[in-house]
Amino acid sequence: MKPEEKARQKIDQLLESAGWKVQNLRELDLGSSLGVAVREFPLESGTADYLLFADRRAVGVVEAKPEGTTLSGVAEQSAVYLAGVPKEIPHVQEPLPFAYELGGYSHFTGPKHLKNGSLRKTLSGEGLRIYLL
Image 1 (tube, rainbow, N blue to C red):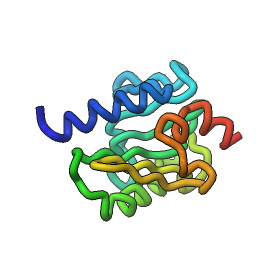
Image 2: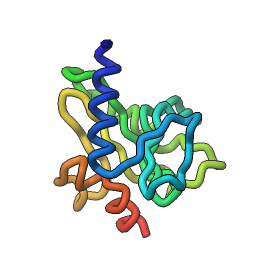
Image 3: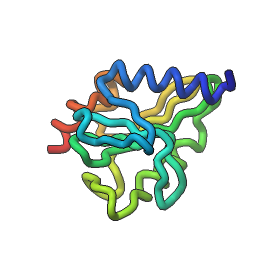
Image 4: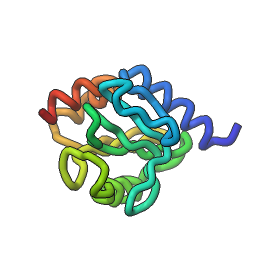
């Protein structure tokens, strides 16, 4: 298995354990769960590894790198994705408020009071929905 595939498998498990329904774009069903993470989502600025939807609106991105990859420069890539959501995609604000970069370690970009939690606490679909409403 390639390092990218292993990273994706691990991140799928982390997202699912945090309450996200992980989907491919071809099977997109935003009503299937309060929190939906869509793999390989095309944006105006590139393709996000995961676009996160809470209550049917885009709220953030997850950028996945193979374990052992340093995350220098990845936050900048995420920032470009946060600002690149197509207008026809329902989203909470522009740019999107949340980014999570995962590799050998993780980095969260978002409101300070959410930064000190685990992926499970910080990025639960319900937690983001409550924060955003």
